[in-house]
Length: 268
Length: 119
Figure 1 (tube, chains in turn green, yellow):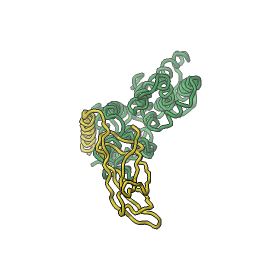
Figure 2 (figure 1 turned 60 degrees about the vertical axis):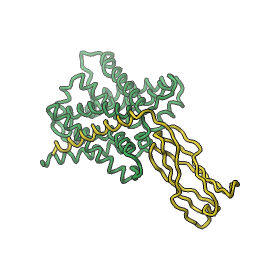
Figure 3 (figure 1 turned 90 degrees about the vertical axis):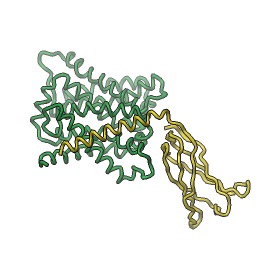
Figure 4 (figure 1 turned 45 degrees about the vertical axis):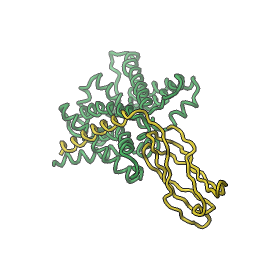
């Protein structure tokens, strides 16, 4: 066993822990684990896999060059997250001895979404920079959109399990909903182009503001909103809701999704 | 090493999908009867503590399950207590307790479920 690899795995544990702690310690995620529709949970897991492979490909916890390596890394991230989530949930006493396998698998699988993303992000967050920086540049537009989706999925999955998303949607008037959608879009643009974070993007000289805004921020918000719809659906947040309420809920979850998407373009 | 960890991950992932598919194909979750069992009765200073377990024989998860214990002397209720179980997942077991003033061992104790929410 090579020492660098062990360091990489340890870092992955750290990443998984850091990124999944908020939902590991949120009660609603435990009950979602067994209460949510089985096929929607499968859909969530299947959606996660390409995201993990992509993340591993662009910035995994090893210097990944081949797609096969990226697939391998994605599964390593799943192992690490499963071990971490199973251990912590047992210590928390959340994995009941009397419960059936269905409940255990569900509870752990819900944690796998942020955890395994975190395990793979650990490299770009805490690891050495350089190689993956170069790789991301090669990703081009597809890479940018991919990272936005991954970031949106991560932050939306973190917040969607809480009751507050629906509560906020109930409290908002249609005007407030519209304002929130515009605000999310604006924040998204500012995050990437104006806030001066490390990794900030410069608007290319030959492109107008409108072009860049439409290409990344508007499209990005659209992607974030779609991810928000998917996550809301997966967690059963839209079941039995009117169209109006569903839109409000999606916009509420769209805020973290948009910020996740925007910050992913910076940090990943 | 990475092949071992990656292999475990692939097995975990695929078996979870397979398991969930089987669970999902069993059809819609159905609520069914809940059976209660008195685990033990502990006399405390000012009450009799009845520890019970509830077994959900349906596949539907029940949220906010209202549980009531009644102590009967013949057909007369001499004592009663209410409780709530936050969640009782399908085919699973959860435990709780009632504090009763009357000694339920001297009378007939009945525990039953009254209502729940679908989560």
